[in-house]
Image 1 (tube, helix red, strand yellow):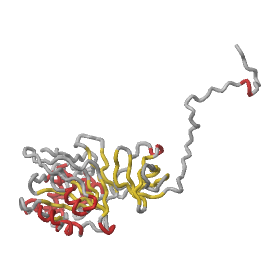
Image 2 (image 1 turned 45 degrees about the horizontal axis):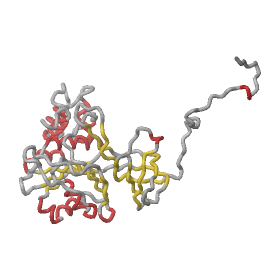
Image 3 (image 1 turned 120 degrees about the vertical axis):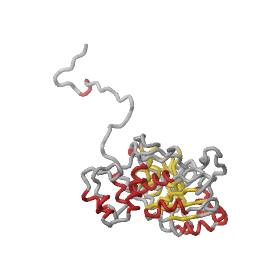
Image 4 (image 1 turned 90 degrees about the vertical axis):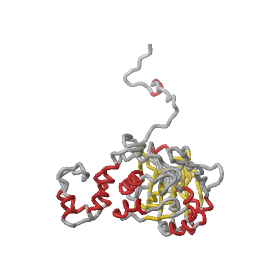
Length: 338
């Protein structure tokens, strides 16, 4: 057996080769100073379509981003081939900080949250007044998600020719949520799009709603050149439509005055990720009343010694506002199918 002396020559030292052939690891990452900013328009099986200036560029996430995922609406920094030519692929090397996030979980017991849309200014909650029947608890859940994520809600009621909107609006007028009421005829002749557009100009608006309510039909009237297949069937037994929008897609309004983001129809909107203490900030007239609440007060019907009851009884706020707050807080603990 060969032994080495105290001062072996370099030729005598055996070096084990790196079987993987990888370069030595380093914590130094490239700065990508030549990266260009883009906006994610849609995501499909790991490929992201991004808008870079006036071109649509296909890109994929760089390995250095790890498990961090980009979603529709994200502002990202991209390197590589940005020509937008067919069969080219760029790399997303950085995801910029988000100004707002619309998130949901599969249900209230699911700890895994899903980011639906990033950087939207407004959440348009589309609900049919009939066929299918309106689901107020779904609306409440979307409102909670909007308030929690930093989006301004907009209630869009469709199919007013089948049922009146008065009873449903009575529940949301105290919340101060702006609303639009449309009929099927207005959707077909384009009159609805003109009314809705007044609330969309200059904003990024995400549209959400369960299947069959006319969400994608409305988006098609707003952006006719990018028509998506709409729901043509509502189940007579369940009163629910079939999902026809399978992925979120950002579409520019005419004249580049804003963006609409069409999202897949949802049948549940879990709120496991929502901290109930953040919902109160959507009620600025009630926030001062929480100063006398005990530490850790949930402000709901079960809260002991909640100071909001006295705040309202002393005339500082409308009792309907406190009722609305507690209704939203309570809906976080309920199932959509209840």
